[in-house]
Image 1 (cartoon, rainbow over the protein chains, first blue to last red):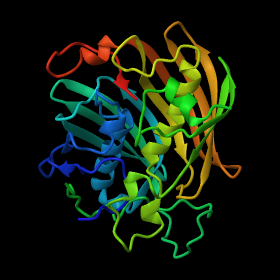
Image 2 (cartoon, each protein chain N blue to C red):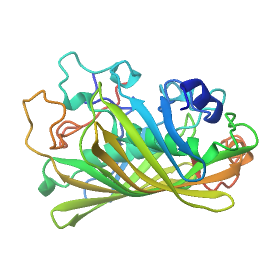
Image 3 (cartoon, helix red, strand yellow):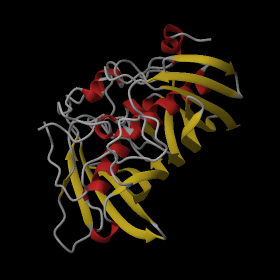
Image 4 (cartoon, each protein chain N blue to C red):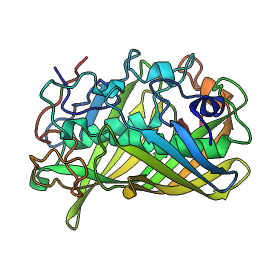
Length: 155
Length: 170
C-alpha cells in the first residue's frame, strides 16, 4: 500500500489500546528502515526525530472526534531520554486535551528498556483542501490523510 | 563557505540522513547560515502513489527539524569535529522545544537555516533560530539543547549491553 504522505519511516503505528482505555499505539522499528544506513554507518540508531515522527503519526491516528481534521502546528517540547535501536518495539501513550482553538497531544514513547522520549504537540484545524498547485501559498495544508483513517504498516 | 565534503568532516550523518547541503556563513561560537535544497529524489518520496498530490509531497516535518538541527550540529562541532559516533565525544539531542511549523515545504524549495548559539556550557549547547524559504519563515525553532557525551553512552546502551544513558541520538 502506498503511504498517504512522504515520511522518513516506512512502518506505521497501530492503535493497540482497548476502547475506553488510555490511548496507546505500537510500532516495530524494523532493521531495514531507510534511515539506518546513514544514521549512522556501522552503528544504526533510530533518529530522535523519527521517534517524534512515530508520535506524530500516533497522534494523527487518535485525533478526538470533536477535533475534526487537524495538522501539527508546533512541537511544543521533546525530551530525548534513551536511544532507540533496530529491532526495538516502540509503544506510544497519548493524552489529548483542548487548548482554546487548538489541541495539545502529550505522548510518552518507550521501548522495552524504558522511556525513549516525551513529546508535546500542538495541533490545529486543517485548512480546507486547496486544489491549487501553487507551492508558495501562505495557508498550511494537511500533511496527512484523514485522521479517522486507520493506518497500516506498509512493510 | 563550507561545501558538502567539509560538512561530512564535521557530521557523522550520511546518505540518506545527511540533510545539510552547504554552509554559507559560520561565526564560531555565535551563528551559522546553512542551505538545504529539497528534491523529490530523496528516498522519502519513493513509495508515494502515482496520483499523490502536493499535500502528499510536503517534506516531512520531522526531517525539516532534523535538517535544522544538523546545521546547528555543524556550529556546535565545528572546532572539535568527530564524524565517528563510535569513539570520542559525540553530539546528542537533549531536547527540542517551541518549534512552530508555518507551512509545508515542497520539492524545489531551497531552504536557509539560520542558527544562533544562545548559550554554551562545558558540555551543553543551546540553539535557536528559524528556517526560511525565499525569505519567508517556514519554521521557527525556539530552543534546541545538544549535549556532548562520551560515545560509550551510546555504544553501552545497545540492548546487548544495557546501560543507563542520558540522551537520545540525533
